[in-house]
Length: 111
Image (tube, rainbow, N blue to C red; front, side, top):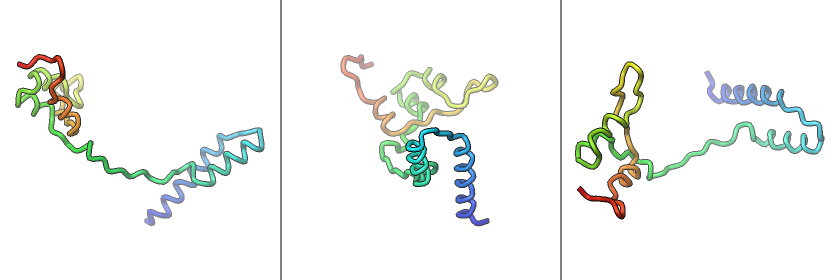
């Protein structure tokens, strides 16, 4: 399988499908829309970003274990809980979230 040919075919199929819904009566507006679509508006270039603020930062369970959060937080803040599984999975935080939780707030009580 040629993945590049598959990509081109997929984009072409999608473009034909979505263009079948576009009915613009005004010729000037239709010309502008068609120009934009032909320039790649259907399939923009991929966006790649590196953002160090989204580095892994531990879990709610770890913050409970070290005393930062109340023990009930480990029970409440979980992923993938269901009607049959109330325990779910640990909630993983990003570094900036963990830092915000650990940061003392002005006017907050310290225990």
